[in-house]
Length: 549
Image 1 (cartoon, helix red, strand yellow):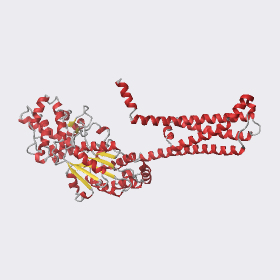
Image 2 (tube, helix red, strand yellow):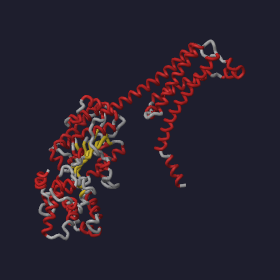
Image 3 (cartoon, one colour):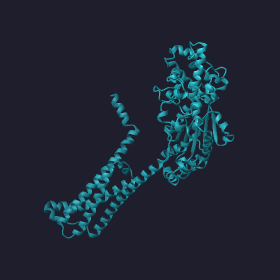
Image 4 (cartoon, one colour):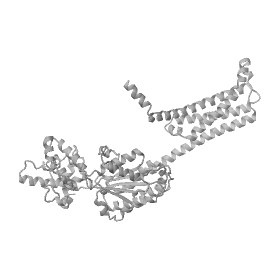
């Protein structure tokens, strides 16, 4: 009974009902085509009967039969196309529906005239010799004209449909020239398992962002900044998902230093343009024209790319008065873009969207707190909302994740003992949150070693881990062994107890990555030089590593 009730509930679901209606509509149209083909066959058959038994109207009968057979051939072509790979698109055409409907109407009327009740009665008494041609020559001319119009109309629609398909194929070939960064979108495979905000968390901040997005009078840029580990990317993914669910997400780009195209601004504009086309298909012909006019636009300066592929096409699409909300573009970790000059350019380009009146485009950005200051945006408040996470009394998001990994790593010890180590560093001071996060993980490397062994171990740590944290692009353990000139397996050995802070793949030829940039911040923080035994001199690490490359 429960299963039946659940099934009944599913059948009553609005989406299911909508799907059934669409299927019925499509199937109904296909059925209509078959019906019209049958009608044309019947009319042609009647014409044959009349031609064989009526002597005084053979010319009219022959002309009408020929026109009907021509219409039937056109409809059979339509039926074949409906059953083909592009049949759904053809059946969705409103003009095609109207044309088929008109054909059926004309043929219904013609069949009624060719098969009147009086003729049936006469035929039942006197046989086929009682047949009389019911149409005058003038009527035949009018009917032939109408049937010809039906045939021409359908043929024209088919021709237009084929031309549209050819145009679509050509357009797609042109648009495929836009280079797009792999896995940069919020819902890419690389971001699939990364955290979103739990229900009931960050409620006030998410409310502020939603209010900003829905208020047409608000600034075009919402810039969220915060220290490493404060959950900026988690918020970005949540915001992007929320806007995507509402249908308001135009594009997303999650920068990530060292991850190929995701740390490179060269593909940033083209990736955004590609996603905007998917959201706003009316952009496609304008972007296509831009690419055809300048085939090398994807490699041009960021400003030229933005103006040509985003700003100008957006300015050419029709106004959407029914669209009260904005189209939001989410950009995460802007500070992880390789070149600071590119970041400065990107921000200045974003401010130009105020010129667009057809649709309101807004940008949601995240970065570390020092970025706006470093870029020198003294006047940025004029067109940007800057929201800081620094003052929020919330512990580092990465703390919980790191501690969980650390406690569950049986290589390091029993969970109960691991938890005790973490609790030793319990603190309320925001400045020492990173200490509480990472020192428990690192201190267990020194357990049970002598002073001399400790010195060697720390030096080896700085050599190996210091190299990992300064690399622009991550390398595998095998490559690091070779570049550092250390025995094979050294890097693997040094990272074996650091799985709670490093992503160490099981295969030695796969790259080792930081789980979070805050680990790098912790190790190179100059203020911790005297207190952190694992402190890494960033400049020294570069100098030691560079000659080996």
